[in-house]
Image (tube, rainbow, N blue to C red; front, side):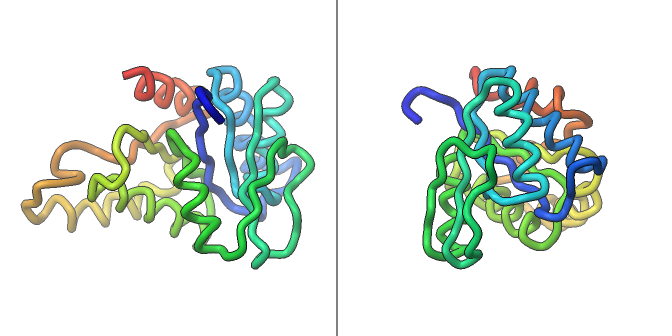
Length: 183
């Protein structure tokens, strides 16, 4: 991990090969690897498998953070499995490992991951670690939260600029992260 830039990708475990969401995550893995990033995910199926697969197929390195809590081991596209005990440890290890983040479409687990990163950026616990959401899926939630955040003066967070950026494509996500991490 020394010297390499790692992007942690969050997303649903539900998409299967052949679905649009799986293909989008696989394309994200390819784009991130081609931009020189290693990819970190939760290590299981769905988006996590697809992004890891895409990265591996493009010659990249992959990390999977798995937990005893969930029982299964990492998917076949993971180079390095980081095994922890609980889902809470898994969440914070995924955050700790990332130099940047992308949230794909997902359920409550992905929502928690995105919310934790956003709050850590908001309170300046994380700095210099860009975060993007892929597609418009998260836009309604982001905009509703921003109504509250921007409606009250505060010295931190969204008042000083958007902390979570929406990107339309895998290529745009990789370009956004590469630009932000060059600074």
